[in-house]
Length: 87
Image (cartoon, rainbow, N blue to C red; front, side, top):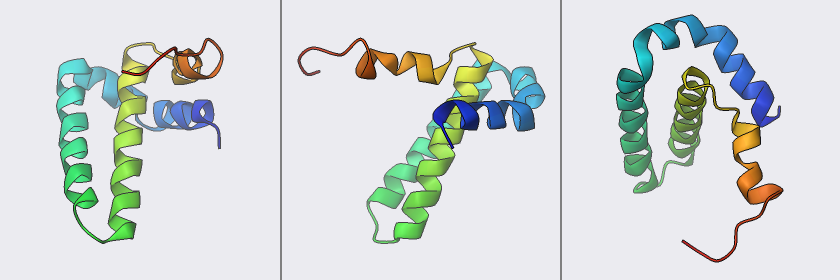
């Protein structure tokens, strides 16, 4: 599955509810999942790490969807246009 396909899957499955929730509340859910990922990374449970990475990615797709951002296009910053130097 491509990034675009997954983003579209998230939109089809959760889009209406996500748009109703809006960006501020969705961002709070995203941050909660990032916190859970942080906890998972501190542990040794690989399955839990996979689950939390998946959750973070799904919520990132949700945020992108409700803000009309195509993540595939956005990551062209790294793939097509290129990034010079380090941050």
